[in-house]
Image (cartoon, rainbow, N blue to C red; front, side, top):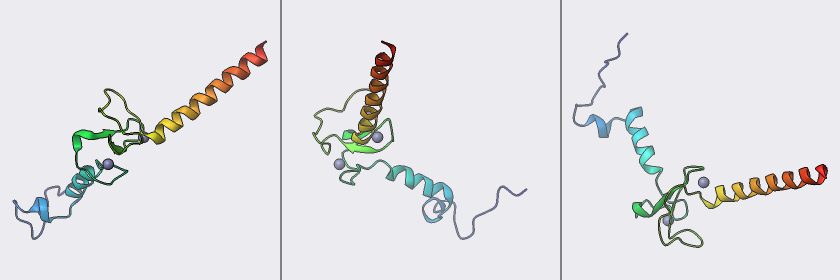
Length: 103
Ligand SMILES: [Zn+2]
Ligand SMILES: [Zn+2]
C-alpha cells in the first residue's frame, strides 16, 4: 500500500502544469467542454447556453434564430428540442389512436 508515491522530475510548484497526470488532464477537458458547438469559441461565456438535455453549449447569437436574452430556467438545444417534439407527436398519435379505438 503506497498511496503517497512521489512523481519523478516534478517539483511541488510545477507539478500541476508540467505533469500529465489524470487530474490535470481532466481539469483541462472540463474547461474545454464549454465552447459553442456552432462557432467553436468559448468566448462570451455569459452568452453561452448550456443545454439541459445533452449538455452541449451554444451562444445565444449563434442560434437560428438568435436569442436576444439568455433564457431563464431550462433551455434545450435545437437537436434536443427536435427530439422532444418528435416524442410529443408520438404521444399525441397514441392518444388519438386510443380514443379512436375507444369509441
Ligand atoms: Zn458561438
Ligand atoms: Zn441538447
